Length: 95
Image: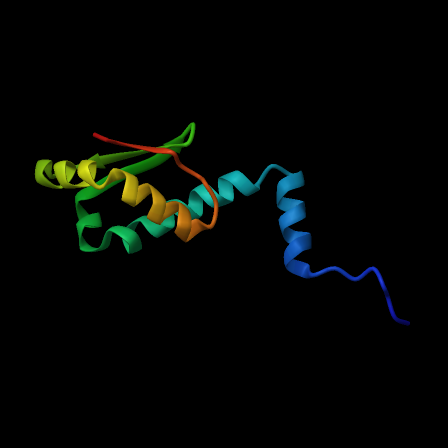
């Protein structure tokens, strides 16, 4: 028996995640998981990452790193969103 209404499993999963309002939390977690990969060795100086209202909050233990990241904030936002494949954050606050 052949079905003509077959759909790709990836699209069905994505549709389910949207219906259950799980797509945003999943993308947020993907972004947090990508942080060490995007930032590299400097990620060891960061802690307590969380996202609230499309803003990523990052606690830093190095003032020099804070200055460097503040200057490259827009590039970092683009890199993180590109890695996830969606616009998850629009701003980063360094504390």
